[in-house]
Length: 137
Image 1 (cartoon, rainbow, N blue to C red):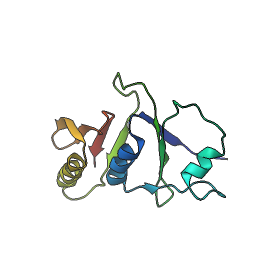
Image 2 (tube, one colour):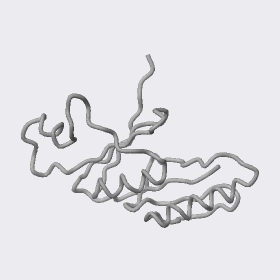
Image 3 (cartoon, helix red, strand yellow):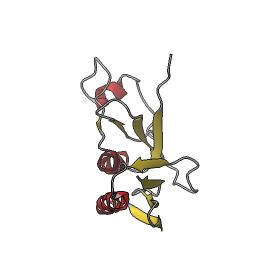
């Protein structure tokens, strides 16, 4: 049996970070597990959670192919470079660099930052909370 992979981000503002990654990947909000109607109802099923427990957001690939993304609010700030990062692949075409550049522009408008550009190959970026990722063909 194959296992599924979820990617979980510790973050400061789960909803805002999830909005960025919806733009980046074309993902959508994942509904709560049955029989719950809302995520709040689902969270309440765990009983009294510690006051320090932050919010969260869950995203899914609408095609069901990509991993689920989970954003969990934590009190600690990000302090170091990621040891694992996402590569946003825009697909090969006759002019892949123009597709990469267009995606980078879209993500900058959504709150991302360009960290380094490797002309003709890929761009290293950071999301609004500083998580590094690459945009490539």
